[in-house]
Length: 413
Image (cartoon, rainbow, N blue to C red; front, side):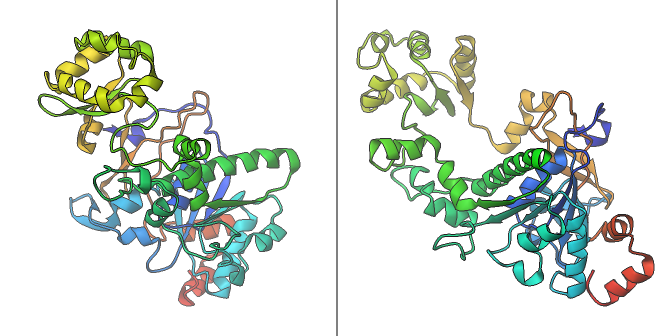
């Protein structure tokens, strides 16, 4: 595990000089702002005094302090909140609203995930903040978007996976529909929000004006159906659950071996022909039903049992070695522990260990964004609740100690 402070960097991170005001919580919004922070933006996370982001309490497991004792910092919170500064402000109070407006006036980006219209009563909606800062890029993340019959509903990853059809194509056809094992729609929404924010910043560089971004989990989920969406729109029939099989490519699924399982991911006809030679199945390679992928899809019911029987003859390790040597895509089905132990994961330094304010080390997963000429700084640890309130208010807004004391006594910070 690489220690983040040991990483040497040269040059400036890509988003140096960009300030992000993060009014979001849970996962989709924080995932976007963490990505911006990884790229070098200054991220100020606004949290409710006393409780903060809901996910701070979503444990166990909990971060351990320097003595190995569990803290009240959850692993869930850690996953999406590195490289941010935490400022506690009560936006329900007029003093708190005024502070957030001042911070927005000094920022480039605002990210929020309140219900549609939820921030209007506080004067923190796009129109109000854009009047103070016309260059502001303001990203609203909601379940269903800013308009339409469902706009006022709250949206959660699990229910969106169901409504958007993703669960209808996930899982075994013999079992109930399944959600993906992580909150994938939240993560994808965070990534799409990041893309939109970067595009809006690029346009601002040309026009001098910011804009409002309407980002909806439901839209993202539908767009992320990818080939399955087009299978329906072109073919006219709703795709069905196929377990680990692929609707458009065969053989492309998990198979049992002599001691476990592997994934065989044959992507073209040449790979299939090589596999047939390797598996001692020359009759398949010469069968016109299986010579093309279209034929294999049409005749999967007769082909798959033969392939499955052949793969049971040897162990997973033996097959993977042979398949790799033959240039046939295949891989193991790892646990997450095994995935982090993969030589490639170790070589790429994917597991991070970041010194934390409580004395322990905060675990993290390295950002996949690697820019050759804009290396990232060592990430900051996820912040303690309100850790940077005084620092940000003093340095950025020039609020002195006596005024901060007054605000704190009033409960505004």
